[in-house]
Length: 459
Ligand code: UDX
Image 1 (cartoon, rainbow, N blue to C red):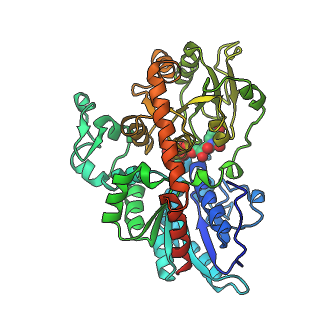
Image 2: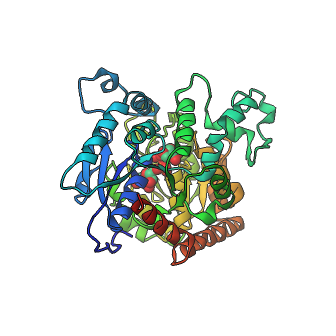
Image 3: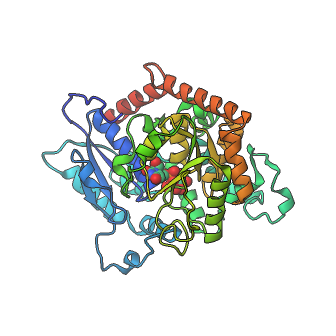
């Protein structure tokens, strides 16, 4: 973990990393940066003002602002700061950022008295970075912050669209399995909520896939044994090498948290019996309306299980925080916080289940700690992660019908109380064990780190 020994080798080579400015993307990129630093590389991080990382937590890195430095530039200064609207920056910078990135990279390449630049590593969604790097003959690797399975589904969006899945209006077909991805149901594809035409997200994904395939290598926050069939397909279809590295097992994401993490509940959590608390968090972007929020609250209460619930300010549309909750809701059973040190919570022996929105970081952090999941995905990769965890590895219960208090309390009890929950917990434990084995010398994850370091050193 964080106290991993550094190599004593001098820092002869520099790596420039450029994360997408969202929590679920910043965390794995800074975990990767820490890992490369621990292997002897000098680290420079390019970042936007919007959601800028907590630079003071990384005195050993050099940080450089890029893309949104001009507060008077109306193209981005007027964009929303919260919710999906904030994502418009990604589309905009992909359109207009090329020259600036190229210029900034040139400065790095020409810098005197600094180690030479080995390569650029960007988030895969910064697809515009490929041509900037190509124009300078600088190798660009991508960090893909979702699963391999998700990438393969995204890469098939044009096909899935041609087959009519994205625009399907026949509700009778929702439970059918998708022939091209048999693990998925038609409703999972619908729930991703993508269109191919006139849709900025759909377009960004198609460009992301194209430029990921054109990159010099792909780094995934995963491990071989978790997604072996998908890895075979990736290796067959993409010439660039792939490196699967389980970042949460190397460094925690706490130091890159954009929000302050509450730790005041730990004395309470420490007093709870093993596997007795359900941890509830829906990530850094998702929002619910007030009615849905109250269903979540009643579902938790009706389950009669203890809970630790992260309610991010702004999670409930139209509310600053938890105002819609009925008086006396918490009682003795629960704690609500604005933001938590999630990995530490998942590693706590009192935590018996994670009710999650199935963002990839959350999903994978749960896998890393062997914690069974209850999945309530919103969109994008989340329904794919939920299906994979519930139907492939069977370490999760998928709440497929939205926010209904009876179904919520029943799912919590299935995982926490019923005999079925014991089997789910055992499978989660076995999966965690596979991961531990992969981290040992000679294991797939261990070898992947060595291969990545050797590859970057070879440029
Ligand atoms: C987004 C998308 O929703 C997700 O589907 C995609 O895979 C990545 O980008 P987000 O919604 O924030 O990310 O979810 P997730 O990927 O789970 O990342 C959340 C991160 O925030 C995790 O690393 C988690 O540990 C951290 N977190 C969450 C905290 O540190 N504290 C909290 O209280 C909650």
